[in-house]
Structure formats: structure tokens, C-alpha cells
Amino acid sequence: MQTRLYSPTPANLHRLARALQRGELVALPTETVYGLAAHALDAKACRKIFTAKRRPANDPLIVHVSGLRDAEKLAEFNDAARVLARRFWPGPLTLVLPKRDVVPAIVTSGQATVAVRAPAHPLARCLLKLSGLPLAAPSANLFGYVSPTSAAHVVNGLGGRIRYVLAGGECNVGVESTIVDLSVPKQWRLLRPGAITPTQISAALRKKGIKFVQKKPGKNLLVPLAPGMLDQHYSPRTKFALMTQLEKEADAPDTAKIYWQKPRGPRAANMFWLSACGSAQSAAHALYAVLRQVDTGGFKLILCQPAPANAGALAEAINDRLTRAAGRR
Picture 1 (cartoon, helix red, strand yellow):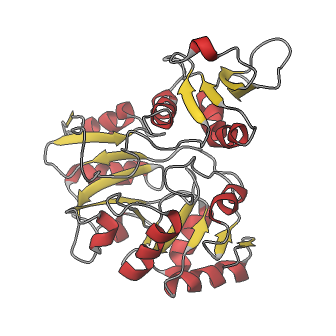
Picture 2 (picture 1 turned 90 degrees about the vertical axis):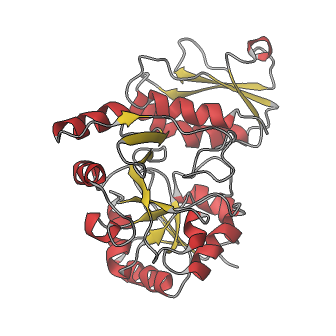
Picture 3 (picture 1 turned 180 degrees about the vertical axis):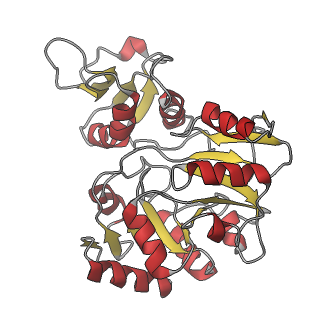
């Protein structure tokens, strides 16, 4: 199978929308990472996602829609979910809610809930509009590997496994969406941190007079409620650890060192960084590109400095990804 990059011309956008309507897969940019999209209500099309990514069937998909009206056709919204959708959509917030019967079981891994969000990227929104479909779209990479934030990353991982890649530049945010479970009345659970923070979510709910208590999901779930909950995920192929875990090996020449902020002084061949100025936004934007670059550098070990606690709103999301990347294999 030949993989082809498509520039975002009107003709190409219509061509890719028709491909989605036929049940084909299309890799497309969102503001978070590139997604591998399929018609979310077509079980056969969604099965192609699992095959192309080598994704286990017990890891559910996120369904992308244009907005709240389309999302309510797929999920049973409560007052809190409507508040958050109106406040943060389009944007990097995913809501987990009871699903409607129209959603195929393969999308939810057989569970009674579905994850939905409205992306903000103009090209993703354009394909949603042109196709007229809800689109299931996990990250466009082989399962468990570092997420793609450019079209080149997609081709590097899925070249020969999919036909269509929409080239839309680098993703603006750089880490996956915040996922909140609102399926249980009067409590909400943060399943995955992202650019929308718990503080923002709590503030939005309180302003509407809704008091919810944040609770963490139980561990060792046989079927995750949403993507990104596995202990080991987002991982380079090279052995990876946080600097605090293996400091005794940090001086070895075959060890790559990724710093949070660009160090002062001369740069060694095994030194990398996430941000030149220590900004959480720039670090999140660069995170996966740096991990991919270092992973191809021939090192035996990658050590990465976690985000400091005072780094800002995205620090929790970045450290979540780094911790999972260093998880047990």
C-alpha cells in the first residue's frame, strides 16, 4: 500500500472527505497530535484503525465531532458535560459519557461509555464538515509509540499501512487532550491530564452552581475507560527513564540526556532539551518531536528531566506522558 501526503487544497480536502465516506482511513492534524480518522459509526472502518496501528481491541477510541449538537447524537449529556462543552469546545477536552446505541461496540471496546471531543484545528474541522461524519481518531502511530505531531511522523510510523495523510504542519499543543469522565452522576474523574486543567474544569462547573468532586479512577482496569491510561505508553524504542531514576548512568557517552530547559555552556552530542526558555507550552509542543529525534540517535539509554512543579498548567500533562513512557515494558 502506498502512503501519500496531501496538501490542504480544496480539491484534496474534498477527496479525503470522500475517502472517509467510503470507509477509508485518513491521518489528519488536530491541535493536540495527528489522528488516524475513520467513520465512527462504521464498525468495519473503525476496525481498520486497530489493524493499521496494531492497537489492542480493549483500548477504546475518541470520537471527534464538530460540536455539542453532533456529540449529543452519540452520547447522553448531563448538565456538567454541557457546561464544559460550551466552555472548552472546540478545544483539547474529551468527555466520557454514557453512549447511545448508534455507536459501535468496537469504538468503545464494548463499554457503555464513549469518549467525545470537538477539535479546534481548522483542517480537522473542515474534514468533519465536508464528510458530514463523526470521526474516530486515535493518534496516527503504531500503538504505544511516541505520538506524531507532524505529517512526517505519521509517514515514518504508518507508511505503507495507510493511504491518506493530510499535511497540516506541526500540531500547536503537542500533547493529547485532557480526558474527563462525567458518566457517574455528581462526580468527575480526570483520566488523562492535558492543556485543559482540573482548576479550569472546576471553575467552569462552580460558575454554573454545579459542585462535583474529582475522583481518581481505579487502577489495573482490564478495559481502560479512555485512551492513554496504560502504565506504559508514548514510549521510544530506546530504553527510557526519568533522570531521577537512573542518575548513576547519566554520564555514560551512549546515554542521551533531555533537559527541561536548555543548559548553559557548550552543548555535547548527547544533550537535548524540551524548551529554550523553560516554557511549559514550548516544551509540550516539542516533547514528541524531541523524543523521536533522540530515539533515532543510536543511544542505549535516554534520560529525561521531568517538568518542575512550578512550570505551569501543562507540567502535569508533560510529566504524565514522561512517566508512562518510562513505564514497565
